[in-house]
Image (cartoon, rainbow, N blue to C red; front, top):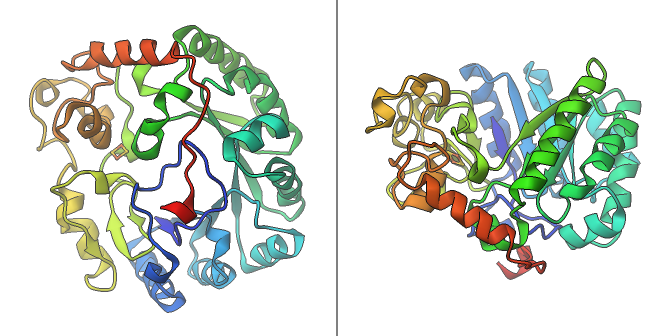
Length: 354
Ligand code: FES
C-alpha cells in the first residue's frame, strides 16, 4: 500500500507525479483515519506500506503511523525528498521502526540538482540525510529520476549512490503523465543518449553485483513493448490519496469514467476485491484486439492505462509503447521531435500556486 499522506511538497520538480489538482492541507485525513486504515490493511494482508506524498515528512504524525504499522508486522518504507529532515527527526523515525528510506536525487551535483528541483541547498541536505540512513540501521534506496538535462550525469549519480551506502539504486526515466507532460519537450532524451545510458547501466550492474542492486526504467516513448505498470492494475498495489480515496494507480484520476471509493466509507477489502476502479482493468477481460489475443497479455497486462488515455484518448486502447499499437510510430516521432527541441526551461510544479 502506498499511503500518500499529503500533497504538500517543498520541491518543484518539473516531472512531479502527483495529480494536476493537488489537495490542500485541509483536505488531508487525520491521524486516527490513517491508523484505522493501517489496521485494516494489516487484516487485508498488506505486507508493506510506503509512506509517500507530496512530502510525507511534512506530517507531524508520521512517527506514530510508522510505529503503528510496525507493531502490526508491516514493513515500512519512507519515500522522501529528505529536505525537511534532520538527524533528530530521522532518529525518531528509526526508533518508530522505519525499515527503509527511499531518497530522491535530481542530479549528481548541487548546481544541477537544485536547479531541477528548484530548491536551494536541497542536494546537500539530501546527501547529509542519506548518509545517516545506514548508520541508523535502515536500508537505503536512492531514486534518481533521469531525463535529457541530467542523463549525462548518470555515471556520477551511480557513484554517488554507492558512496552513500545505498543497497539499491532506482534509475527511472521520466514517465510522461500529468505535470511531466507539460515539460516533455524540456526533458525527453535523444535515442542516442538513451543508448549510452543503457550501456552505462548494464556495465554498472555487473560491476556492483552483490553490493548495490540497480533497477532501471526506460522511457516508454523509446520502448517496443509496454512495461507492466503498477505491477498489473489492481494486482499488487493500492494507493490511498491524502483525502482517503483508494486508487489502483497514482495517475488513475486522469481516467474520467472511473469512480473511486473512500476508505472509511467502505471496507478496504471490499474496495480492493470488488471496487469499480480496481476491477475496471484488472486481469485481461477488459482487453480489445490486438491485446486480447496477444501472447504477452499476462506478462504486461496491457501496459499503462493512464498513458493509453493520455496519448490515444482512450484508456482501453493498446498502450502506445507497444509496437502493435496504432499510435506507436507517432510516439516515436514525438520523442525524436521533442528531444531535438533545444528547450531547457521548466514549468516548475509549485504547490503554493496549485
Ligand atoms: Fe496509471 Fe500506468 S500510470 S496505469
